[in-house]
Length: 300
Image (tube, rainbow, N blue to C red; front, top):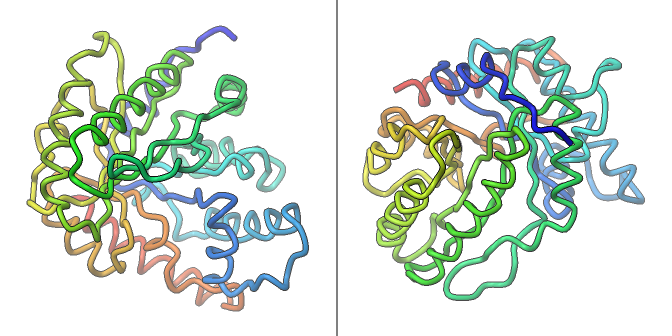
């Protein structure tokens, strides 16, 4: 497929817009848990297709909510199954951009490999080429892929970052902006040390990129405030976003607010407190309060 040029309107919005990214991308393994927290129990579905239909209903309710708007939200990360479904007759990515002015991203990784050298690399992404072509067809702007760092192991962290950037370059070559996500486990005993090694490895990889390449970074909120400020201002980096990583919504927002220029890309913290049984009014009010709080923490 011919590589398409980047959408400069979306690129500018992601680079300098005020707001945060909503992560609506829990996938296969974490979907039952996401549904259970929303009040839809496992006995409500008997197979994957029914499960994904229910989760699409939940995500549609979030996306269509008046609280979910571009004044606060710059982008949204979708799971493949959500990209391949529609909202009010439009593909989800088109609905997000055309109706909501929110930039669509796609989660592309296939989960984590087993722990080795203190890290979990990404499993091989077998159908990546075909998936990226489909994302381009569906008017998706960028992608997201996650690895996890559990220990301050220099070899492991180097492997994580090298793998992320290698796949990232393949993604950028298709005309998509990759969100590179080497998550540092917030419960790691040597989190701060891991972050020091991670930052150096990211800087090394950024220094090796061709001059026109652009990436985004999704990182755990650092132990030391403003630790990633030089990554935030790096010319190769469109935006640095933070994951909530298991912190409660309050903790995540409080920590995020102390990191200037770092914006949220929360998933669990975004849907905390939402329930299938809520009236639309209660659901929208709850979501509105959550979104405004995450936004406030993101614009510091």
